[in-house]
Image (tube, rainbow, N blue to C red):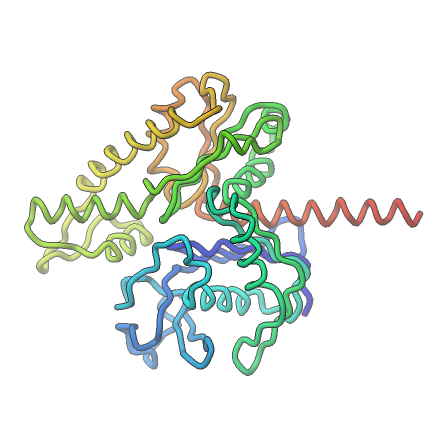
Length: 344
């Protein structure tokens, strides 16, 4: 089967995949845990499918499990800039290719943090790693022809252009100054779009993201209760809509500790946004929030831009990958129209 566009957002917390041939993509979201099978705390022969559709992947003769909650893995989570070159990232990539179930992909598009995207050599290394022929086990061989690597907030900006469908919204997105804030697990990215064009000088990243919030949360719990809860367990609880974890056999409400951690991190994020060069906050027409931490970081954005309209995109964890797909689909349609005119 041939697929025209496949969009991927391989994050530190979730794997997001968007594909399809209609006007709206099919989106699949799995936990982003990946590691060698021997690091898995679960019995892989006893109902692995019940654990978020995780699967085993062969990477150079070594078996990895991909698409599982990080709490089920003893392996340490990758949290470094070169993560896209790791075996864990490749295992999640192959899991995404299995989800798409295509043997040929014309265009694959993915994103990296703003500061990484400024490194053209890094982006080319990543594109080179993702393109070409990939043997996914014995049953599936996938050829990826073209790979596009973009800055993560561009995905949320493209998604906003679709999700915010009124004529007034479209004019603001097309003609105004729109700031996209994209808090993920590893990095918090922001990008300014002026009349639809990315203003690179007013875009940036920091590490005050959800990973830092969760680390601060467990430190506050440890300081008060003199024992530690793993970050992965709190992350798993939040993924399932819960504010409690088992702690010495009792249900611990970690909500107050999370709120305190968020307040501290949000103060730092507000300061970074205020200090960002060339943003000129009084001229921001719209602030768009995407990413897994969107709702948690609204307070920081409100503090930095009290006079600006603030919108959290629907199902914000999928905003980037939807936007990648919409963006690449629009590009292909525009190219097809130019070709059609040239042959008319």
